[in-house]
Amino acid sequence: MPHSQRLHSSMGFHQSICYDAPVSIHKMPTTPSAPRQKIPDWFRYLALIFLVLWFSAYWHAWGPANFLHLCDIAVILTCIGLYTNNPLLVSSQAVSSVLIDIVWTLDVAARLIFGRHLIGGTEYLFDTATPLWARLLSLFHIVLPVILLWSLSRLGYDRRAWKLQSAILLPILIASRFVTPDQNLNFAVKDPFLHRSYGPALTHLAITFLFLVFVVYFPTHLFFSRLFPPPESPAQNGLRDDR
Image (cartoon, rainbow, N blue to C red; front, side, top):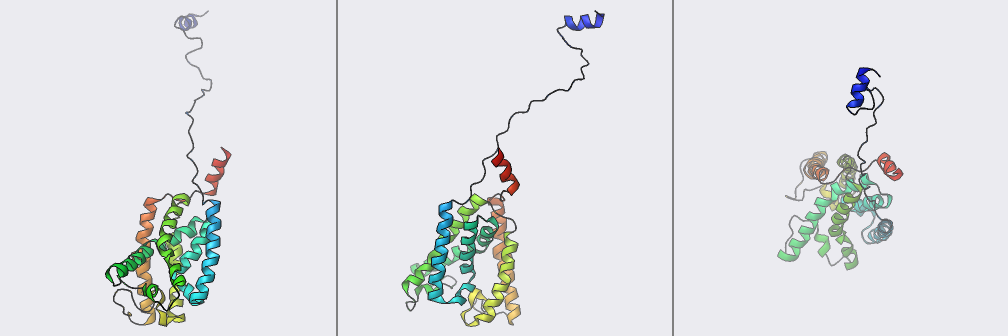
């Protein structure tokens, strides 16, 4: 045996020091994070049933033009988003409705406690000329923010939501101004604070649009982007299902 091999064996080596065979590296197994839960089936079907009943009752009580209200559009799109497990639809209506519905609730509370409205827009709720059952249907404003936030915690918040809602807003504002100008739907004729119109129709609509997009929608979008993770991609779901 050559001297170098005897030396290696005497030191306890069974192979040459210069060993060029591939070395296997054992990685620590990683535990995949649990997949985000979708909307439960029972709640999906409950949302669909509610939408059918609510839509029929609202049509009977208020007429078709009432569905130009952004809050009513939010109910329709939210229920569809819940039924289809669509995070983009749910996210867009969270951007549109959570803050507005909180203000709606505060306005009703101010009327009940202090006898006067905070900014207005909920006077119809105290109009006894409208059947009580029809007015009580508007209490969805109180529940909807809770449902939307819970849904975002399960589906994630889609970062495209505020752009989609801004695109939805524009034609709705224009229709509100020219289809039902006497009702001031979505404050397309007069603002909710000073109760005045800002110049010609297009000027007022532009101001209202920019206010909602950049004062209401965009800050809400930033808040939700920090609060909720983005939705899981189909590829991520597929990888997790295969494990």
